[in-house]
Image (cartoon, rainbow, N blue to C red; front, side):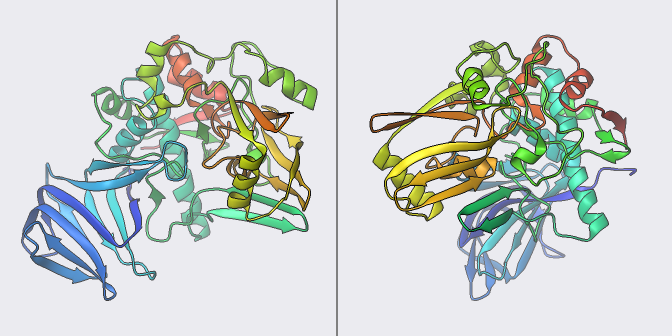
Length: 437
């Protein structure tokens, strides 16, 4: 590969109307230049593009606006954290081209075409604060570049879509479901947590993010000559997780559980060990109480999440029964028990039995368990459950699936003086780091 590819990023999807602003000059085909406010509406199997004076510019099933040098475009009311506990909308600004597509369902998809390296500058500033330690930002740049190039390479080799959004195995009394990269037909990757956070230039508040991307240009993580499918989550809780706890039943050599510390922690093997681990505060890189460091590491909306290393959630029986009905579609009746059947080495549950007076079911994997037991998501599936009277008390560890790199742990390692290479080789065993362009 001589040069970085251009990629397409889905910013908004399934919208009936879109509002924004062209900051600078944009060209539509061979027509004149456009700038200023605009709106787009799905109407009669076409997208109708209108300027800020309400004059129709064009109507078509697909509209591409090519940004001229120094231009950008803003989109209003973009959803971030879709269906996660931090979900909200915000206005965002992007470089590159703006594409409006009209899918078969009669809505509008808003797509940004941009060079990979410019995309990465936004990703590392959106995933974590651009004020984070430089070696961590370099780590995240290499990680994010590897993740995307590996996925695009698989798509190219196999001639397949990017991937299926979810895979479900349903048997009598059992639902095992995992979510992977979304099945994006119109773009390579989405802009939210389901792929990688990409919030345009909005979060690039310092030159440090640009420096990290420039300093790692073309560098990726490989294993036996293949670019790695590098996974990461916010905080592992002290031990990272195996790939097959969260996704399909296969072993990925570089996505195996490791201790997020300078000394080894014993993997969780029994319920007694899980309880002792979750109720303790072991030494770990991601176990930090340094608020000043967290302010430098985390974006503003992530700082709203408190107690991510060890956490507690409490429900009344009737509240949890209602959540289960809403999220699973199953009426369990009177909730009688929540029983872990299988855990990974970090303590994350991959199979859980829910027992009710009307019905009992087994649910998995990691993310589906978190969704069934919360109106948004539990922080992780590494939890124990206590029943006290009419209350169900969840005590848990970590934030996210825990597979691969622990972002807060890696940022703490960088603050302690570790290089990007040492951080990556800590979390991904047996890898090589190579420059491919």
